[in-house]
Amino acid sequence: MAEVENSGGDSLWALVHAERASLAGDLAALTDEQWQHGTLCGDWTVEQVLAHLTAAASINQRQWLRSMVAARFRADAHNQRRLADHMGRTPAETLQRFTAIIGSTTAPSAHTAAYLGEVVVHAQDIRQPLGLDGTPSVQALTAVAEFFASRDFTVPSRSNCEGLQLRAADSRFTAGYGLLVTGPTIALVMTMAGRTAYLGELSGPGAPTLRARIQHSVGSVGADK
Image 1 (cartoon, rainbow, N blue to C red):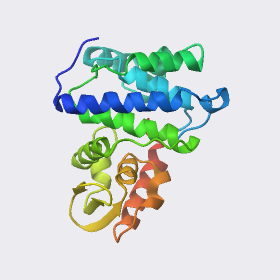
Image 2 (image 1 turned 90 degrees about the horizontal axis):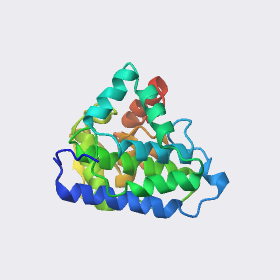
Image 3 (image 1 turned 135 degrees about the vertical axis):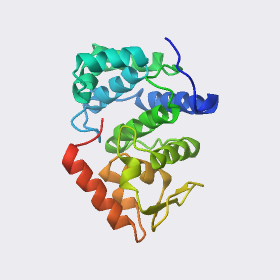
Image 4 (image 1 turned 120 degrees about the vertical axis):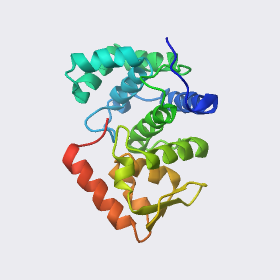
């Protein structure tokens, strides 16, 4: 697989690889019923979200552009086709395909922190509904939180936090100015990614504002994929 310019350095790719490996380990003993369980990612099942992660780690910039053109720049159509390409005949085969890309540095762009965010968020999309205990490392969560707070990439994370100060209760992460929103780093990351399931873990005078923005955003466009 072709590699992209690594703007985040080897340390970010090491975190990506570690989080993929951790997720693969968490899923190794799932039952057939659990593989078809719903997730925080719209109407996708656990197996579909995992196939999506495999697809994201298997496409370079040229391939991504070609796929988007074929989909007439409809992200949902692009994602659905790529997901189907990486689904196995069985959940075990889907997991095997994911395991094969754990060490990949292939990506559509050089925004390494975004692809760390991809695996961090989608891992929790899977773990949270299944009640799995695994969580991303604080290093991975902090890097993703800083990226999400700094810009809108695939989700309006920065716009949703405008005029608010975010402060993690369990890490060094802090960003922005204004009414304070505080909570676990994982809750801040997942909320910035548009996951309403984590809103209850946030507090502070700015929490109602952020909650309203996220709920409005999700109600308008649906769950992010």
